[in-house]
Image 1: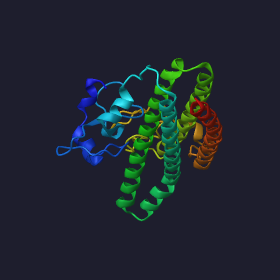
Image 2 (image 1 turned 135 degrees about the vertical axis):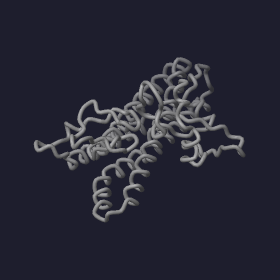
Image 3 (image 1 turned 90 degrees about the vertical axis):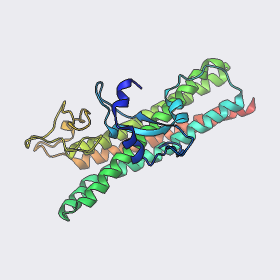
Image 4 (image 1 turned 30 degrees about the vertical axis):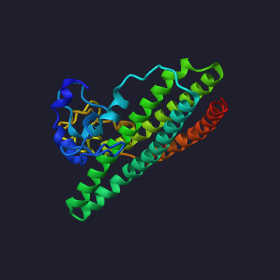
Length: 275
């Protein structure tokens, strides 16, 4: 992290996250031994202050996982097996988290419309809070899995040819799955943009009655708002049904990739346990 990251209100981020690491649930604070750090997730502005919506609370150990260069020291087969097992477990949980985020995102139009019809701010505030929290957690989970895959990639040169081939196949499929999961998240963020909201902080991005389009920057958090032109009908209205269908199709593609990953994980595990 660069010095500018510390310009954000760390205490506000920690308080929002209940002084708890959003990955491993370790509790920190003045009366606890765990050291907490704010960590940027997703896209952040290249310059200036990082808004709290782009920061999550992590403990020192998880921060190290995310930021430390992966070790290239070789490991025994049992330890490599455990690393693969932990990585697949984390990615499996991330798949569920991404699916939950997609479900939440696709419910946003109806949720906000219902809250407006009932003229209640509570429903809107709850939906916004849940969206922002779920998005942050999903992006953190993806970053953790990326770090684990980097660790496995660093070990590839240290293993024998047969295991290396299986490990490379496993890692390639896991990376492909990561890409599909990120695509789902991006599509979910596009739902927010289609509601004239920033996909990061969810503040409104519509000014003077003009619909946001390309290269619009959120005045609150500095993110470039996702483009929605490809998802609009000829009359300019956003085709949410088409966007939702694409989200479901992408999730299905991720499910198919998961099946391939399971096969390659089993092949790798058999080789490692046989040694």
